[in-house]
Image (tube, rainbow, N blue to C red; front, side):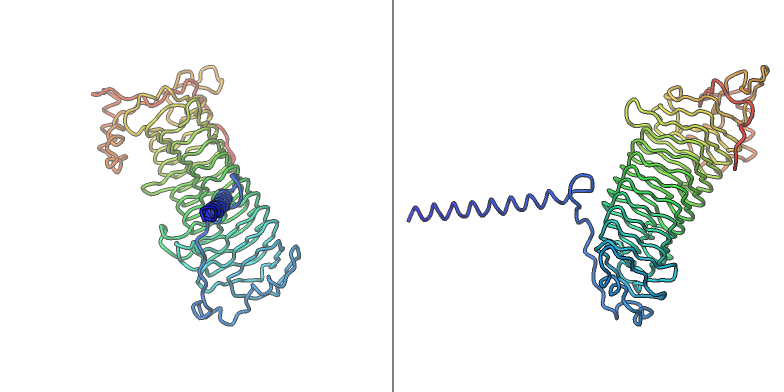
Length: 448
């Protein structure tokens, strides 16, 4: 009998070991992209009966039937017309809509989910998602690699295009807009989560909430248009992304780097980022970024920087940009030094450069070869540079730097008089904001 008990215990131990080993192997497989197998990170998508969807889709043919009949790797060219969603694509297909195919989910759930790689979706319209943030109702979820999403119109959806753990995809010439909701409760027009090496090119994202990239590296955002949203692009823990040739108008923030390393922003136009938090380009504990040859105009703040660069021995390079007609050209908060500003053009700004409070790190930044429209000096040797350094001092500006509420009176006669008297006979020691050793005397020519 004791022998039987020992055998039973051994059998139980072996069973438990097998179960634990199996459980551990499953846990290891659920890792973010780039760290192992794909994890199932989506909340379960609820199923809605037809009568729960808007009546406009009740008589439409389900698009899923066409997908189910198509062979993997084939080209599906549906007859023109409107079809009912939702749609799940779990095999490589090329879907050619020719601009004449609409898939409507009837205001419930997500319109289309692409759970495949090496697929093509082109020339269709996706519309009518639900409005649940809990289940991330969207026009299109992409959960695969090496896909091409091209010339797709997405409208009347909470979220637009949502990529999770999806790499090497091309998103080209799509038009995305959200549901007509208050700005804060719209969905993101384009969202990347743990998605790397994607090309986002030539898209229009209008009247959405944000375009965001979380934990997503080495993506390229090129020639896109963003308008009337909150963040044109918001990077968080997202390194080495490239933003080039885009146009961002009437958004609260143009491009924002939060907890990032690397990255390039070049040849963009960022305009009319206004409001209490209006900012063309922003940094929060970011490092190693290059800001090159951008037009930053009519923004509340051109560049706003907080504890950046963050990593030791790193820098942020700001060069060849135009800061024009902004409230503040560049604003440093919690300044730590390490910013290099060269060959930029500052004109028409109410305040060229400002520090959020007094700073002992002014001299740790580099200013060289910038053009200042308020430079007071000469170029006697005609070399294109001023004969003496350009120094920016804070006089009456200190009032609203330390009391932002006073900024409302920035151009009032009283503030202008105080500023004049301070410069004429200072009754307090002005703060040195910057010193450009070699300011440009001739305004550089720039193409619009």
